[in-house]
Length: 469
Image 1 (tube, rainbow, N blue to C red):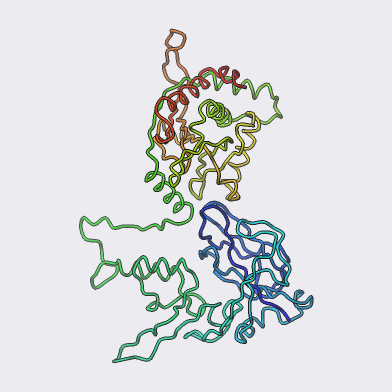
Image 2: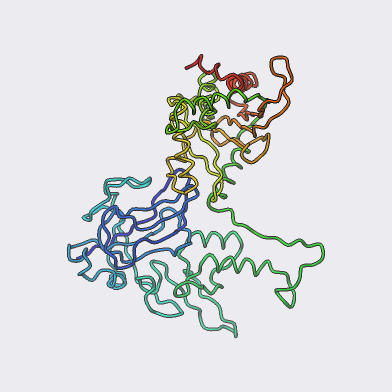
């Protein structure tokens, strides 16, 4: 006899509480193997293929493509049992609704079934503790009693309460569960004062989707009058609301926290980068036409790692609860990368142990993965210092917000030819502005100035860096 196991959306990385279903890789009734990817989801940090920890027949999927699911929410259920059931010859997905109606016990993980050997943050190689739950039959939807997405017409575990007969000539919904499966939809409705029981869902069997709630929000904000298409009043510019979700939502939360908690200060200096550009050309020429090219960002990262070795106060974070400054021995340099999905900060680990060629190779790999949206959560967390090259946007300077919980960020502006006094003579040199934004709790201006001055000296005279190598 098959045992139905529920697989919930696992924790996909630090600080991530939800993910959007991008593409289902399996259908209801399909046989899956242990560790087989079953769905592709997009978090605020990366695109991830989620492997299933069980082998068996998929009996239900939860969530449509484009819908957001919370970590811990049901993702799919798998019938795990005998070999003939696993290969599809048994009752499989067709009996899922009947099994639920009969009150089959479903374990939350482990048990007799085969478990995953893959490690994705949130679940690992062993069988998780058993969690037993009694599945009760759900009443049919008011719009019909047919199966929806492979399960009975309560759409998974969420029953739908049909409208009660009219009272005093007015029909109204009965109290009780509402036809919503996504906690994100519930939260959106709650924040905007939308009563879910008053909505007619556009999803399968009357399921209320995010779009239904957003339409209700838009209707409540529409101007009063005989027509919803009436022109805006003179002087009213109108408004467009964009949800803070995904990458933009995470960036907003993190930047707000940084500004609340970190008393940052910024210092900056103009530097002559002519010699650094010449050194880079010499390195790439010496390597030959087939050798990997050294990027300017790699040289700047190497300089930052050397500067942090001299000024370890800036490779730190503040533990506010313990009221302690935590200095970090290893240097993991994050770098700001603008992508189609928004701003992300990939991390080069152990930058202090890498040479310029190794840094250039890793920066190139991470940049490519960032643009493709394939960075893993581990490649986007754990930085101890951030390098921000905002010169690619054609600007000279900036006062960036520190990447919480780090203590400092170095910014580099565009490199442009400018008149400059060089060896006592006026000349045209390649000049840039570098800035250091730092947490004033971990150090005072003297340390920050010393760090920035060392970086500037290495940019202007790369030979200075050789003293510490």
